[in-house]
Image (spheres, rainbow, N blue to C red):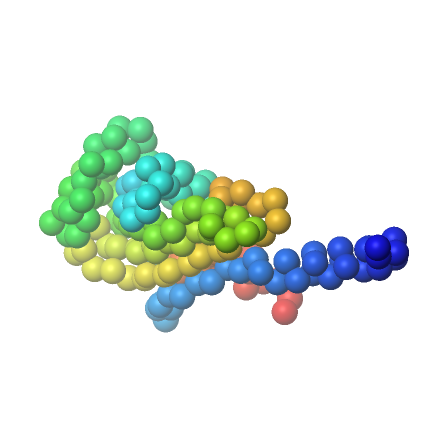
Length: 188
């Protein structure tokens, strides 16, 4: 039977090791100039997971992060409903048509790759997604990034998703992105 001091030491070690397991990974292009976004349309994300609600959940979390970043988001229930069943995302798809109809200069298109609790002994939440910033007028992708997060201990899939989304939104090369500015201004 371990002593109380040894038990505390083991608990501290376990917490420190567990903290190292929480990761946010992001990869994306970095254009040399910041993009000026007059109005951003955020259609529902493509859901490439087994969870029926993953696309809607991460679309909503991303909308919150964009508002926090000060990016001019255009999103209404009508646009969410109109575009929810759309699978053609390119310049010929309804997303681009909807962006032009609403006066959006850009679209932020997302795909959810992972949204689940892992099936290992710990059952940690795992989230993975890709975001693509597209010019509405041309259909040209100006930035794309992929991110993921694995939570630990008592984390929820929502908190893992929020961390992954905020990390990607922070990377968006959009003029006036307060999350990007806050990160760049922070001492290293």
